Image (cartoon, rainbow, N blue to C red; front, top):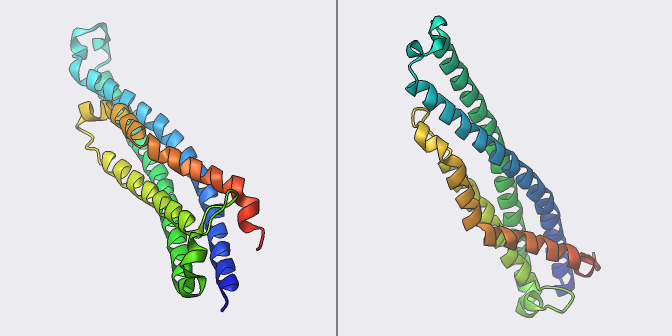
Length: 208
């Protein structure tokens, strides 16, 4: 196998990987946006449930409805369960994105490893004003894979909630948002990388 053939093989693998990651990134963003909304809903329900616990209905004009407090409590609990179920569904989407990206990045690294001897160091490091090097793109992919992996596990752990810990559930939007803020630089790195690949696409894959 010549160096040119090895380079084409690696480039094709990179192209497939970035194409798939672009689509997965859109799924990730949609799922995160829906999670943001569900987290706020869950917090509001926890606040209402806590208020329901504190109020003694017998001492209010509502005391004529003997089972109102129980029915309201049951309704709020059911709404919380449903919201948590929806959140878990969205976490499954995030997990799917993480797994897909990890698989694709692993496939690219495998293709690179079996071609690296023919490709050579110089070809791996060669870059121009119009095209990053193979080594650059492999590093980008590993950074992207790490971002999704870390984000998923942190959010998964954050949602290990106990229904009776209402005060913790109420502050969930704040800690959820703080995670987004702390990872904003890495998220921007992912978006910038995908944008760069899109801009360089014609030069990168022109020989395929």
